[in-house]
Image (cartoon, rainbow, N blue to C red):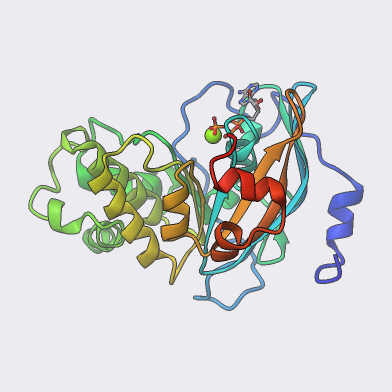
Length: 305
Ligand SMILES: Nc1ncnc2c1ncn2[C@@H]1O[C@H](COP(=O)(O)OP(=O)(O)OP(=O)(O)O)[C@@H](O)[C@H]1O
Ligand SMILES: [Mg+2]
């Protein structure tokens, strides 16, 4: 509270997103890319510095069912933050509020603030499309456009956002390099996205998300559908990306959290139907090695969940 007093405004006037209102596209498959001009968000950080994203007192509902209760979390710039916790405790829902995807679900609503370098992405001057360009997302199942070529997939976010780039070959190469897929695809850029393996498709989705140069990348169990080798490649990619990007990753894999995350937050619910909350957040080494809360100790040591 004391770092950003203006957050009080956000907290005191909770937002409820009206189902069917602005920005809601009921039931439509979402890829993280939208069709608005890319007006730049005004951010407080130095250009080029990884951005900090902060959830402030975030609550979420599906209809009248509250699934996240007043949850705050600072996800530091240039670091990987892992979100862990048992199934149904609200990790994906919380993640989706960080780039305003929660409000795409019919009946969904939320309250609280999400600050990207101090600017509330739910603020009146911020368009939802701007927020999603700054805060990209990769989903559990790889979802490339299977009938587009590899190069077209990489450029698809820019195209959908109406961003013109005259150095498209460079964007394709840079994005595929950053996504850890360049070596395997440089001689087959015109092959279809659907011709890649599952692990390669997921890295193509990462490259596609990176092509619009987001400040933050959200990843919801990005390796859960992949084999151990592909998982390892993606983990290496995440570690390389985090020098220039802020990454928030949901994972059920405790070893993965320890391998890739600088910080970890544990979500839990008190009982069936109760909303999820963060019970402990800290350095990953502390969460797994010296947890403060006995529930964290139990969870990370496999005693429940
Ligand atoms: N579209 C939806 N409509 C209604 N309720 C939903 C919807 N999506 C999720 N929920 C409910 O919200 C709560 C949190 O779900 P969420 O998917 O965020 O959990 P999670 O921690 O990501 O679980 P998992 O580890 O299984 O992915 C659950 O009770 C779930 O049933
Ligand atoms: Mg989930």
